[in-house]
Every structure is written in structure tokens, then in C-alpha cells.
Amino acid sequence: MSPFLTAALEAARAADAVVRAHYRKNFEVRIKADASPVTEVDEAAEAAVKAVLLKHFPGHGFFGEESGKDNASAEYLWLVDPIDGTKAFVRGYPMFSTQIALMHRGELILGVSSAPCWNGGAGETCYAERGEGAYLLGAQGPEPLRVSDIATLPKATLSLGNLATLAASPSWARLGAVIPQLHRIRGYADFLHYHLLASGRIDAVVETNVNILDIAALVVIVREAGGVFTELDGGPISLATTSVLASNGALQETLRTALAYTPA
Image (cartoon, rainbow, N blue to C red):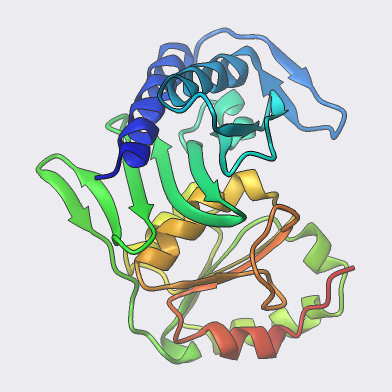
């Protein structure tokens, strides 16, 4: 385990402590300019993550959902969403997570996804480093993650996330044509469908209306589990990414071609 991953896991534990201490309790909720909610818990969790990471790596850059960019031109840039799924956190259901990723010269190299209140409150943490595989942090130690080998739509399970932009595009009808061909369609959303994809329990994910902080850590985890993670039109993931097509790899081109998505 690299010093980067050791620090990221420490930072995730610090955020977990903050989040668990406030979950389903009273806290301040405000509405940001983009109409999304933010709580004092988001801010405190991000501060805890930032303190840990910059303690270990004071020369690194930091890009947080709540505090913005700090030294963003640095060779190493941490990408952090302290509570990805704030709406769920506010409503008191556990489909939210802390997302911590590390980018080196524009390439994502590390991801930690920690859902502290999932799984009956036991939590669930997945992590990966480029070239080192993806793992679930289980009670008996790290457990390797691997995507499925499902290669045809009639056997595939597809999970859908936020689709507002897709719904306003010609690809909405194309998605409708794909759905009857599938074994199953679900909407697990947020961290959950990427954890399920990386562990071989579903086979593909489609989302629009995301930002890089929502998905950066999950990109590394899915790829290191053997999957493929691109923008919905097949383009590369970048700081400007707003859509996702992620799969076990075997279904990637089939879905990309079928949806034929063109960004607005």
C-alpha cells in the first residue's frame, strides 16, 4: 500500500467519524447557488479530509466540493466530495459516501469510496490504486473486486443514475429501445451502483448530470476491477466530465453504439 493510499484511507476514516456523529441528528442545511443542499457536516467532513491529506503531502493541490480549489496546478491534485449524496444524508437514508481521489498530471491514479452508514451502519469502503487492483475493505482484510463477464444485453443488469440531460436528448428514445433487451434495469445511484459494478453484481451504469468530484474515485475502482469507465459518448474522463458510461468492458461498445449520445 502506497503512502498516498495510506493517507487517503486515514482521511476517509476522519470523514467517517464526522459523518457518523451527525447522521440522523440536527444540523444546518443551506441551499447553494446550483440549488443543491450543503450542510455543516459536508463542510466539517471536507475540512477533516483536507487536514489529513495536506498534513502528509503539504505540496499537493486540493479540489473540494465545498472549499473549491487550492494549489490546483500542483503535480498531484486531490479530488474530494465529502458527502456525495447530500440529499440522502439530509433525508436520513444511507446512500451517500465520501469520495477521495488523487490525480497525477491529469491522470487519475487512486480512489477511495467510503460509505460510512451503509450496510446497516457497518459501512463499506472500496479502494484502488492504478496497476494494483481494486479492493473491498472487509472485516478479514482487503477482498479483491472483479467485474462480471456478462457480454450480452439479455443477461445484463444496467443501473441508471441522474438522467436529466439524457432525457432531453435524442438518446432518451434510444435508451428506451435498449431497456426491453436487458435482463434487469435498476437505479442504485451514487456510490452504490459503482461498488456493485466493480464487484460483479451489476454489469453497467449510465448517468448524466454528474461532476468529476462525484466519480473520480469510482473511476479508478471500476477500472482496477477490470471495467471500463468513460463519458457517455465514449470520451475520456476529465475535470470537465458530466456524463458516465461504465461497464464490465464486454458491454461498453454495445451500449455506446446503442445510445449514440451527443453532448449538448
